[in-house]
Length: 110
Image (cartoon, rainbow, N blue to C red; front, side, top):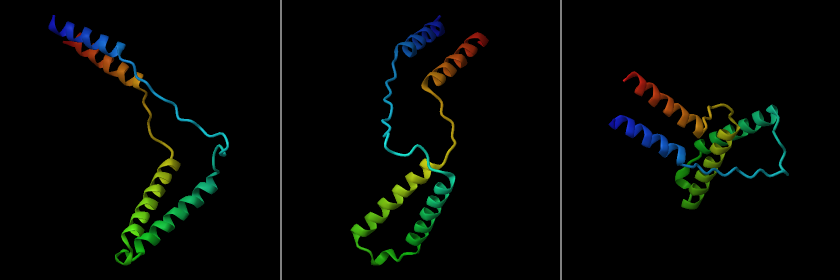
């Protein structure tokens, strides 16, 4: 009886809970996609710049210059991650459906 109540409460909670998402605004003035050659050349430029930064003697740099280098590296890292394709995207509804399916299977088995 207790398990049934918990299952019912969980079902009601998950079905009533709303998930708000906001779509990202896409600028229409930018080109849709870069060609593979452009992407490869940009990645080569980033790799070369990272090697230059690693080879620098950072002990002679001021605090602000080191901070600018860190910002530049972070931006390049974000750009590289954005150009890499792949990964698995699972929607919230799919996750909830999977959890409910697992719970139903466990309830029916036990």
